[in-house]
Amino acid sequence: MWVTRAWIVVQCLGEPKTWYGVPGEAAEFFEDSMRKSAPELFEQSPDLLHQLTTIMNPNIFMSMGVPVVKTHQGAGEFVVTFPRAYHAGFNQGYNFAEAVNFCPADWRQCVFSHEELICKIAADPDSLDFHLAAATHKDMLVMVDNEKKLRKRLLDMIYYQVSLTYPPIFSTNGNVACQPVQKKSRHTKLFKSHQQLCGLH
Image (cartoon, rainbow, N blue to C red; front, side, top):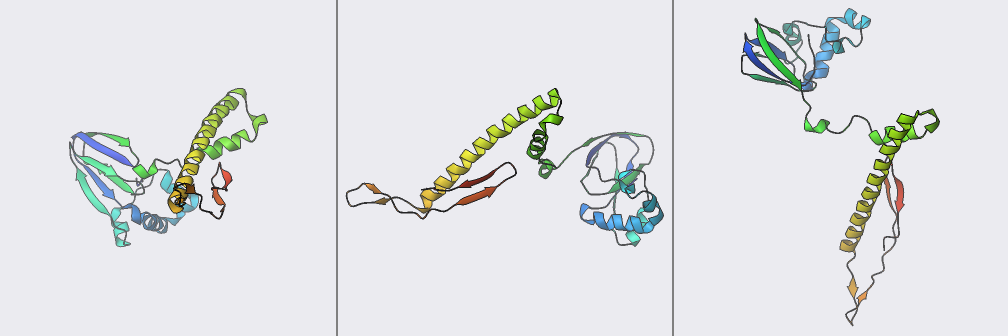
């Protein structure tokens, strides 16, 4: 079957495994080719590629211009399959392998905003049971504390930039004379912040 899961696979012992792979940048081309080759299957199951049940001869894809690579994995060897890189294969005999999912560093950010979720839950408190309300309250307190720290850092950065942009002017007697600065409003809009920072001088 053709799948796109991200795996690190080590073959511990036994006969080789044959792998076929399609690079991630060709994933859409691969998917289109699969749909063209078996349109009736996709009419019945539009999410067929996510069901992990479909195999097709790699030669069909290569004849359509899809790049396909092949390797044989022996005992003691690793194969790494990356996200969006479709792969399929078969065992040439009895073997034993172990696999673990992984994610690259750029996947560390969540696929949805946790802060947004908490705010939306908190916006409808009457619908919450006690345990969910308590958990939401706890997360909201952490979020507010983080927000205060981030706002302070932002103000410190702005004050620092203003001090570099508008250095103090010294008068003839050595005292610091304040340079007049035109006041400007600074705006930032985040999910949990909508604030106007002004009067920086």
